[in-house]
Image (tube, rainbow, N blue to C red; front, side):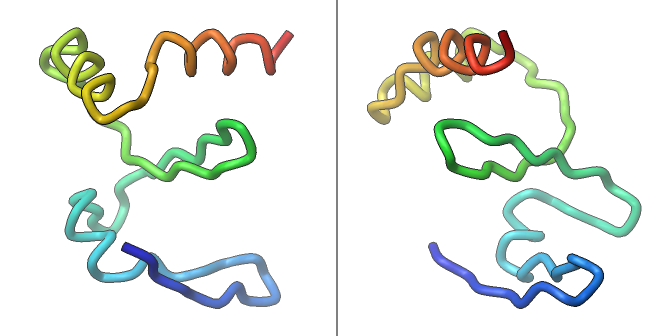
Length: 77
C-alpha cells in the first residue's frame, strides 16, 4: 500500500486513514520513527505478547530479523 501526504512548513504531516486504522492510531498515541537501511518504518509503541513468534513470522516473509537487528546495532556504534 502506498499513501502520500504533504509536509507543512513546520514539518508536520497527516497520517492517512488506512494507516491509522492498521496501526490503531488514535489522538494522543505515540508513534515511533525507525530508520533501517535508509527506509523509514513508522510504528506504534506496544508490547508484543510473544516476541519469538513475532520474529519467526517475519522470517517467513523473507525478512532476516536477526540480520536487521545486528545491522541496526552497527549503525549506532
